[in-house]
Length: 322
Image (cartoon, rainbow, N blue to C red):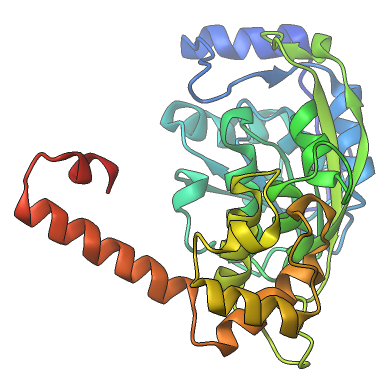
């Protein structure tokens, strides 16, 4: 980290629009591009995230650099994942212009965040980002799985997505994102963000979600349980939200195995997914695995059936659904 006498000069509304005009940029809904134009907001995000001088931060979708500059006020290194080639090519110059001497503390990964399989440099300790709203949950879960070194983070997402990620059992919005996020971390709502701090202003409200990572939950036996198995159980439990667990899980495992697993896990077969915490799903997945079931084997069989269907009848509905 380079020591500079003055901190980065953050981007305001005029600077954001000037940069956009220079690049001939027209923000697209397809990529969820809404740029933050308020310096106080990005400083708030950094403050709420709790990052500091010991952190290596991952940022997704840095865009024109509003949040990146605010992060570089307090952290020694930022790894920014940017899918847009035009934005990725301009960002280093923006940092050089507005945070002289800090351009070497920024590493840009030009890629779709969902396709990233490794990051350069020291293992990151935090994720802080204004996530693209159209893919925020998949991106978040992918990076939490990919980067076990992450200790904490804060992301800005659509308000209702923030509610779902932080929801607890019994809430109307508790569901798949809530449970899967709980596998990785203790998640909480960290505030709301107004629409007027963006350009262009989105037609949805925004919220902040913060989390602190914890070790993967262990099964009742005290041993590790495969995340793929647990997530398959979670997906099945919420596929038909009002269906009892016994019936819902029969979509992924034989009835006898389901009954045996629920009994072994001590989970009420008439319970619904919305009433269960992550440890319940872990217990059920471990018990199902003890019967010989696995999500990997099941998905492999499904692929084989789809392939057989395609070979026998090219262009059939089976091919479309594969």
